[in-house]
Amino acid sequence: MTTTSRPVPRAGILDIEAYVPGKSSAPGASKVHKLSSNETPLGPSRRAVEAFKSIAGHLESYPDGAATKLREAIARRFGLDPQRIVCGNGSDDLLHLLATAYIGPGDEGIFTEHGFLVYKIAILAAGGKPVIAPETHLTANVDAILALVSEKTKIVYIANPNNPTGTYLPFSEIKRLHAGMPPHALLVLDAAYGEYVNRNDYSAGLELASACENVVMTRTFSKIHGLAALRIGWAYAPEPICDALNRIRGPFNLNAAAIAAGIAAIEDTAHVEMAAAHNAKWVPWVTQEISALGLQVTPSVANFVLIHFPQTHGRTAVDAELYLTARGLVLRNVGSYGLPHALRMTIGAEEANRLVVAALSDFVKQAE
Ligand SMILES: *Cc1c(COP(=O)(O)O)cnc(C)c1O
Image (cartoon, rainbow, N blue to C red; front, side, top):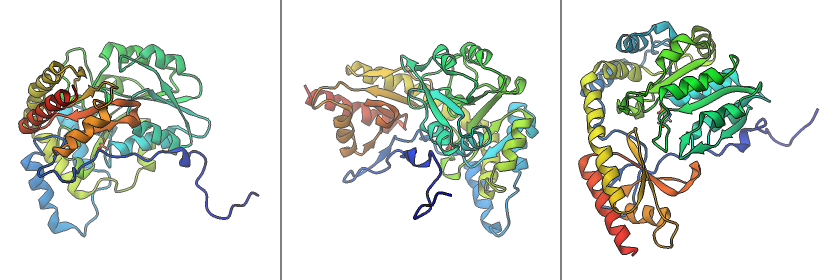
């Protein structure tokens, strides 16, 4: 028996670098525009807020642990089987539960070079080994992923579209990825931004998750529904996978306010359409205006854009972040995603979008 002088976390835990959320303050600025966490500038549906408030009189009661009404509302909205939906305390919860259920010591989980950082944390927390597939032009590369798949691979996580790059894989590529994977390995399609994509070669992956035994699609209420504070995510998965997740999830992993607000939000399709329309209007505008300043912007299908800065003194991403923050414009630095020369900007309200473009214009000029 080996002894230690104090409790020591098991292998892998101390290899985890804790997730650092986007900043929300800009000390000294009179008004702060938070464009660092991909939240919607439209806020949630008013009906969701009303539903949330309606719970206040019943806080002594446990929520429905199975979140049945929410699963039914989601199922109605997308024409799905509610038995195959599992809800999570945010989709982060589900990404972790999947790793806990399918990855153990010696197993591997794959994600891509600039993929969402939660995948790495979930794989390490489960005792597995993170395996990183290189990307091409900041986009997932199916061949590079498949080259790393082995008997040890238990999960391939792919955010489609990806955060923080805003790039996506067409459904044909997702199908090719799935076709190249062995049946024992699970493909997790994280469609946190799926509602924002308006490309006819895109699919969030419901068809695959419906038809295949090794595909799970995850979604969230944090982004287009504007309910990030309430922590609601859901997975569509084959029944045996739902069964595994339901055995290990917290018995009341969704709180009552989240369930009530989630139902109202999913039913308010007009609100979702309005948020998508706002985004469809401003992504091209922001992309074009910032490109016109001589800064490269990665084409995005999501509700944020990745802006690249030169590596010249006075003009770097770090300089830009300081410059913008002093003006109350909080963007996301993405150094932890292997992108030290870029900032990610969430599409905001008109005022915020115009202020960022104006500030970047000044920034570029002052650096000349
Ligand atoms: C924001 C985001 C999520 C959603 O997280 P929640 O836990 O549901 O708030 C999931 N995946 C990606 C890629 C994201 O950017």
